[in-house]
Image 1 (tube, rainbow, N blue to C red):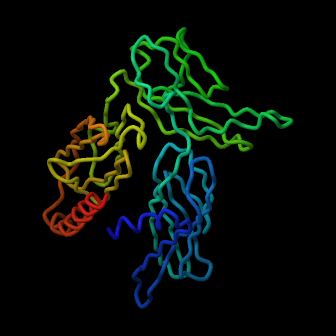
Image 2 (image 1 turned 180 degrees about the vertical axis):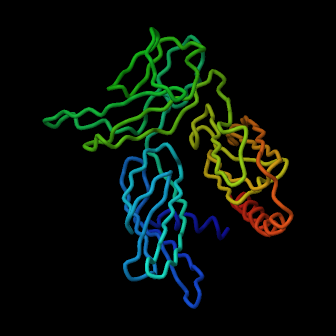
Image 3 (image 1 turned 60 degrees about the vertical axis):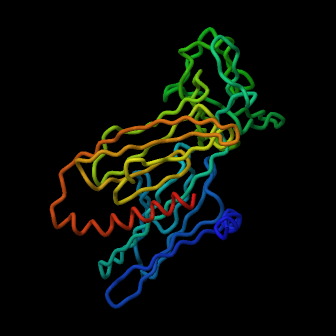
Length: 331
């Protein structure tokens, strides 16, 4: 009961401060990453990296394959990811001492693809409206009469209109006069934010299927030790509206140096080559007693660890398994 009571407090906490203690010879050093507010797709957030390092220390940020210099980072997420891993590196050029800190931040996305009306069950040879929900419509009353551009994607490619399709309401609605089997697929919409046309926002996606309970897992079939891989549970039901998603590991918990689950997204860095891992995603609506699931077998390839490395890793793996089980039970 204590954990449940604390959740509203943490959700209302808009200033986040992360502090890490870093061991250094003869010195207790500290480093922190701070920011204010929620990280939202299409809106910029400024992150600040501070530390006990002085003077004239060099700060660099690493995230999503990019490197940015300076102690502050201003970034606008595009909505393609639900979390971002930010790493702040600090170097004292006089002593050569370096340290780093990593923070995993959740990204909120206000734009999603939905069916209209929401309780619609897709079926073949019927009319259907797919809506870019939550997208800004622009300023139609001002002198510029700005209209935001909306682009539709299906399975990662721009949608090409066919005879049974048309765009309505300034492209916010993708209308099907009569649905065909080939219309099934994973749909996204991309929109521009008002007055900031260079900022693009990709929506949360929708898997259109004429089986109303269709679940699949998107991700690699083969992974490698030390390399981060991402898996996404794709559902034909609207996440957190029609259904919820949970992950199951029926033949053993994923073992590795990094593991995280956020809603329908799973990230994992495996450690032991020559093994197989089953990932199961369950979409369910407990209120109406409906559920569907998908299972993906993943192979971990790579060079086996030596005996000494395996011994050193055993303690870390035990801790990871314990933390993973704790997260699953508390969720």
